[in-house]
Length: 500
Image (cartoon, rainbow, N blue to C red; front, side, top):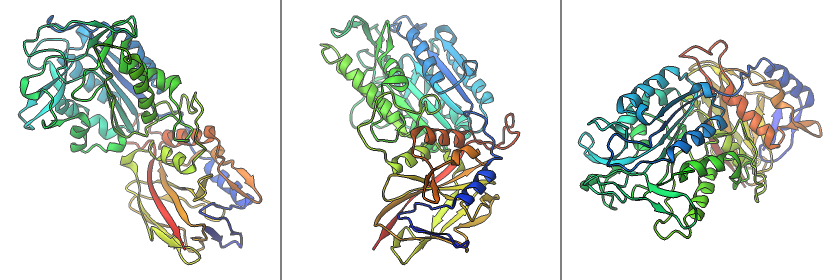
């Protein structure tokens, strides 16, 4: 796509690649220099591990002691300070204790924060008359009528948190199938796996007969409950240790198989399989699943349980700590995949409304226009990955148009009258992302590599990680302690096709 500027600088570079004059680029850097970078977004965690139950008929889960440390490593890998972790273990994790901890967590969380909730213990499935369906539940330590926290109740408790968070990451290392237990609640035995010296125990409690899993039983998980309460799937990550009809396993020495392998894969072992130069939760899940499969390959008692991922599969939990994969990818760099990776870290609640004049442009005939509206004031950036899929580019602001402030409820058209984005080919798909931040971005993000008289954003993975970090950390001035401030970034993504 060709970019024509009123200054007489005519850019002739295909498929959305912007050719910005060097003098104009220096102006952009000056404009961006007022940006506020406050470090990574604030994070909080609630880690609940229950290995001993008041009801002695329930098998103990000694591996939850190891899960406490593994979950801490996951949280700190997400750059959540240890002072921001709320801990509940065993006798502390009563029904009342868990509910009070979620209330405390809500008081701590500010808009734009990230939250990690980890639960290791026994799961169960019960019939909920309020929804006329079976639902998953966790068992608290105490043996009281309200000691089961259903997904429906948990979603209600998490609702005020989900309204504020940039991302809410929930991990369940439990299973809800009823597994090897019976309705009589007699204790289950443990088994020793042939492939490892550790003793394995199922993480499920007895389930009432009508909720024993079969293919035609209606069930509801946490993601369903939360989205029905207004949460956006883009902002929720739900990782469960097993499918509804499977047992998840506890290694009494190393902890839950799901927890220990998700930790290992997030921090060092996962492979960047899509060429984005980051490790997302989908790649972490694939790595952890392979480890579970290998762990149980020769076991005579258990088959591998399957991790379940719902919500946003492209969430990058350790973006700020480890932007690069420890393992090299076999795929070449993809600018479109990289742009998608950044988009999936955005806060869906802050996304600007963007409508293109056309989603399909005829080469040498049409030009692209974007009609943008925002609920809140901020600063706009338009990024693109062209049909060559090799470069990540900044289209706006640019050398001749640096007025990228947008006010609340303002309608803004990009490009403005004195420049345009003309379709010049080659044929293919361009991916365009419109970003809104509450403050201008730092200047050093836009020190692109030279291409003649023009510049584009460097394609180094560290540069893209730095960009995503700055986007997520963007905040209104003075909003550190304000409950109504805007933090993080919103983004809208679209594909624009060029045709002959």
